[in-house]
Image (tube, rainbow, N blue to C red):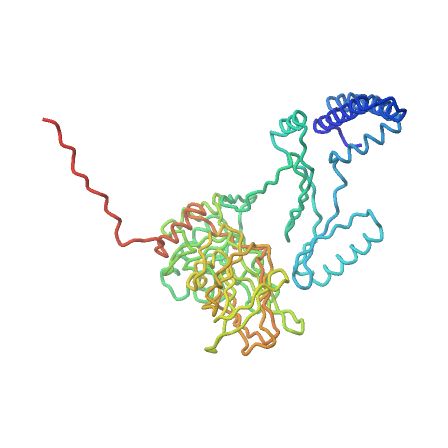
Length: 524
């Protein structure tokens, strides 16, 4: 038996009041008929049994060890037991937690199934369907189980007292909160729907053990970046951190690299994964250098320390003048992060062949390629067709990429802390087709129709341009592995400084002058 709570006691008290009212009405309506006497006697018996159980429940709520024997004695009456069982069911006694499974179907639609064994045959069919769907979409499926918990707040007791005094009761309910990464079943005890904040503006990073390896990336053919890289290698060596360099960069400064015990890898070794070695990444350059470094980490990327040495520096907020202090703080684990989401995209041919997942920090572009013509595309969200695009192309971007090509095409500026996927048409034929912002849980598919006049082209962060034939689709979703960037100050401060200084956001040529009022005349 589940433990008795104060809420259960309040519900039992309310049930007792209802039964007493019914008994009183029955006695008043009695006109001497035998049926009326029988109803009154039955209700009085139920009242007595329920009153006994209420006393035992109160004792049990105060001391779980006491009241158990009285509770068993109170259930000797079969009628009282049935009445109490029905009342408990109507009052929302917590049911058995559902065993739900979430997965994406072949059409990339997210589905949640309940496979409780209330009916064995139905459960067997459901489990078979879940297993089949997971096998067909194993690379993007959610294979977890749903956890179940009850939410409560400080006003729970006052809520119960209001129900007792006013006789009002909202129906109990539960919410299944599901996405690809987590799933919960919530039963609000106060019958109120609330959500949690999904943004992560304050991500504090701390090492549980000292870092040992750092990957250094510098802007190519830049003397200042090369000098800063040499300084950083010396600082990191004094902290006991080994510096890793790209094979090309290592070869360009081989004598210096060997003298400072730097490391590199064989570019032809397909088994080597930098993400399994390096603890953090140090960037010397601009936004393009950061994008270049992300290609070395197709999945999980360690914290990135970006030093601004490029032309724009929208993503690189740390000044190179603070090199020594910043690297010292990073080695100590005293810094905050901006978690910038990435996109993962792949081409699915009309025959069902899948390409490799490509990870993008800025955007995935579908455009007309080298042809100076308008193209047609079909846009689907979670497997459902949304609209047809007639335009020069379409941009699917992250919040980070919203200030790049997407902004130039008329898209919205989105804060990097917003979990979103931005869809921006490029010069659409229909002027009513405006940019839209979708939640980060969706899967977007952009297809080249079979009857399209021209083929289309896809590019991933401006690289790996691929032609989409008629019937091919580009599947895009927000990746689970972001790019964590070390902040100069904080996520909000860095971002607003970047859009004000880098993009001259809301900048005026001159401030508006105030009204010049004449001074008040002094009385003589």
